[in-house]
Image (cartoon, rainbow, N blue to C red; front, side, top):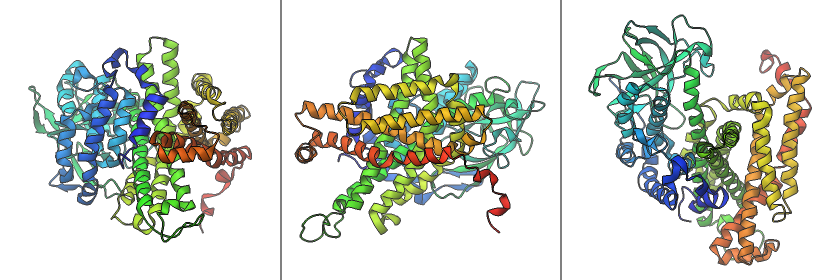
Length: 611
């Protein structure tokens, strides 16, 4: 195995053999054609191994501190942050004209797959990149000139200031206000909480996009605007000037991500916090959702990266750890625990889920890129629509399954997995937040069921179903033993969506509402089965070209023991078969439960939960 962070062979399989990313390298992405993709990924792998992984534990142990109003990040991250920015990794998707790299999204996600196992580290440049993207898209030319060069060089940092203690996920209930000034600026007053990387000493200034309501504007989300609020006001020559009236009052003590400074920030305690409008008034939520959708994909790849890391670490441990005798055959003395059926079960469960998540994340990124380079309006709409439908699944399904994969990795280790001697316990702690921030997974499920499935009259969802059926039809003869299971699952998915629609017509609005999260997880499993079937079909073709009869499982196993490429493709077939035969049937219970229309969730009185 080349790495214990990412299976680089699987990464290249998804990018080239499955998605054909070469077809994306045209138009604005033309410079990435040829071997450029793989060259960049090789450098990402090198940076991850040499700079990001080595400081994983130190960042967790050192944590962050607040002294005299200044936040200090882990000293272990300082060198890596500087090198990360010098290498241009901090601005992968930002436009080249402003100093970014202009990567296709799928290439950015593939690089993030390497980097995001140490998410506390990557959050520092990642938040800045997202804030810069807002300025690129909605800022005036003066704002772009003032902020982007130093943000994209890594000299200045950026955040995303949405959350307030009394509002939380209900952003429309925020109380931060903006007071209009004669010179066109605004005085900002309020407090924001849970601000990731809200301040740190790796940069000389912080630029905060802050959601606030201009005095007199409507209540709720319709009245929210967004403002750029620098920690230090910017002088005419672009240098940081006087300290703005804002300050960090607290760093949150968290379960994980100890190396990331999660701050409480007060704006305008003394009435002098100056901010400037970004975009148009009362369009703050529209603008922020651009960053939010990117952040949700980031949470998805955070889940993938942590899950991939945990699986590969557990796999290596299982190959080396000697314990017990072979229960299914003769052996002299102890054997590696990978030979025990229950350990193999856990490893195959993790493998199939990780590889499905990688395909889901990369496919979604490729949808974005195909929409970007397409000259056909209908095709552009199609790819953008697929991304809309898949985004809540990328965020919610991948973050929840990642936590379970990390948990299972600890189980493979046994008692040692529970100890900080091995890294999987830290990854478990760091991963938990993924199901909570950028919109809890319950909110993601409501977004999927209440908005995404019905977009364009359900056309985007049906485009996804059409893509699924294309793949099933293409490889049905290659994988005859599992194709009917996936066909049936896709049909169940469509029928459940139609059933939700009928419930709406019948006035049973509570049925999709209370079943939104189970449905999202069900859809995540169906989509995963589709991707794994797709991969198995490609693998079967490759093995056939190598002269291997995939129907003869005994011969396939023997060939895999002596041929590395055959072993890789055989693993694809085994992973798909396991998932489709053992995990996919779980959706049958979900469908049954949904159709029972049980309303216990709504009928129980709050007082009845505990006496």
